[in-house]
Length: 251
Ligand SMILES: Nc1nc2c(ncn2[C@@H]2O[C@H](COP(=O)(O)OP(=O)(O)OP(=O)(O)O)[C@@H](O)[C@H]2O)c(=O)[nH]1
Ligand SMILES: [Mg+2]
Image (cartoon, rainbow, N blue to C red; front, side, top):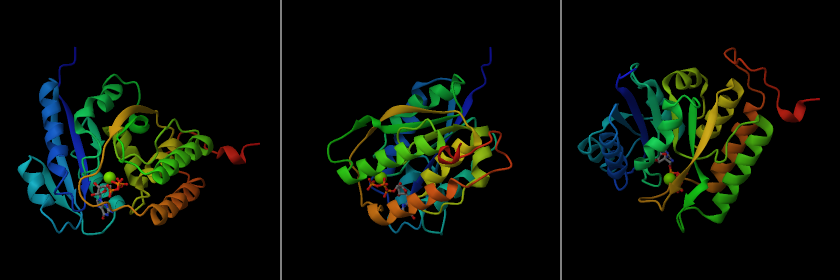
């Protein structure tokens, strides 16, 4: 029996999230304490915050690194570069406490049981608290998820979620290919994982009302996300072990 402790590394990209980040970090530590056989490192990527995000995160037990280039994509890609090589699982979550860090093992279990290599926390098949997501954003999320399922054959029900988990090797296969600098990062990740042929599963998660100020501009960011979706239809990778042709172009 393999009794080696498995190491989880949680990445939290933050731009002015002093209100939410403590609960996010604390929730991870509380959860890992309840589950023997796991260790945890939380890395907060502070992206030009001008509030107390870094201090609050450090006080809660996180390691804080900095990324000066604005944009969630830049922040999370800096986080991926900083994942220690002895990690077994890598989790990404937003710092605004809208996703529940105490649902961590819902995302880890399909990885630890080797059911799949990537787990996506799906809000649209989970629970969304009242007022947490506008009808416009809900429709946008649903539409983008539908398009990704249709054109990329990807097994996803919530492509723009902020809660992901990978086994370490799957993340290392993906990370060198990512280029999105802003809120296009989730679309970049999911579509490229689909092209790479990663096994992806979705689990239902809870999404709650935001603490702090939103950084998202639905129309501007929606257009950027659409551009990533279209651009990646033509993306190919030398590492891809699935010959990929967008469904639309199949004869
Ligand atoms: N916009 C933005 N967000 C960043 C940046 N760097 C990190 N983030 C983080 O990216 C995460 C997602 O941003 P949010 O503003 O919550 O966007 P959202 O979740 O799509 O939208 P809401 O429903 O309003 O919360 C948060 O944890 C941000 O702090 C940055 O430079 N710009
Ligand atoms: Mg948010």
